[in-house]
Amino acid sequence: MSDGAAINKQNNVIEAMNKRQATQVRRLEEEKQRELTKIKEQNDKEITRVARDYEVLLTQDKSEYEGKMNKLRGAMNKRLTEENVRYERMISDLKEAQEKRLSELRNNNEREIQSVIQEQEEYMEGAKTRFEDRKAKMENS
Image (cartoon, rainbow, N blue to C red):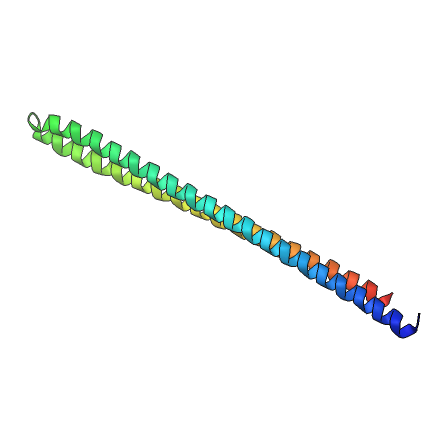
């Protein structure tokens, strides 16, 4: 073999490795993106489910307390006023608790997404470094 053919063959091998590495990196990026999308969809579904559950609880509580208040109206007007105050406070507390829980779920979701993104970026940096190291080895060989 001539030197030119050997160099050309080595260049072809390096180019094939580069293409293979680029394909692997692209596949990994796509896989990580799919995982991230799946996690986000799962978290969105969970947030929707929790919000719906709390709405049902609020509706049930509201129905329960309205029934109690209807019984009390005829007998004790003062008692009715006290129950209304207590009822509104409970709804406010439930809404606050719901908001806190939803906020916590959103924060957890965001942290998890950021963690996955950071892991993906670190992995990509590592893959890039390994690729450059291998490329340098091939060029030095």
